[in-house]
Image (spheres, rainbow, N blue to C red):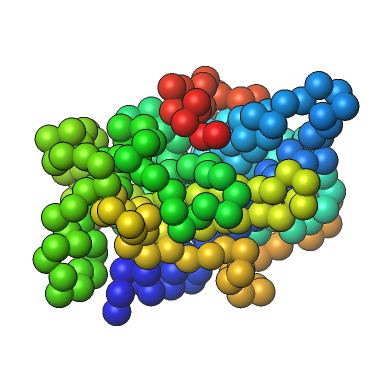
Length: 270
């Protein structure tokens, strides 16, 4: 089985792919609802805002960051804080993912999340250019991820020898590369501001000349199967600590943009 088939199957079976899909759909839905050139928003505002909201939505659906829950609590706990700031439609469509199934896993300051062996980072691109992303012009972290060899190589030695405009000694290998069993993917996202059409991909980027991806899965054309990830029903219930539980601090979910997202990587999103 190919790495693409393994990744899509693993992430779908756990409901994680449904969470990734929901995060992208709702982040851009809210971004475009708020976007107003008449108000003074410039085109770059869409990219930065969508990036921040995409990070926020990933944390919400996967109970990470400011929405992290203490170990052992069910996915429905503390949902009043998760719903705060979400449109009702977005909350109703949010998959129910068990806390702890996904962890926050940044790479060299670039926001990332991990489930099992799969880590994914975020990258924006110009609409219509999803299959032609120039990874050689992206951040050192993205160049490093894209420099990894094809997980399912074809019998073509020459394609593996031609990096897109870079010599091998120009590749900055990430500190986390030695981790055993971790495959770092990229979730790439874009929108056409006038047509409101979106592109949303997940896959293994490639630095090979003329090949932006070793493989990619189109999340817009192939959304997760219905039922992959349960839906919340009814009104969210606040989390009430059990008086018999001994905890050092009351588990409170706060809604704010964490400082970890305000890294140098953010400027690479647009």
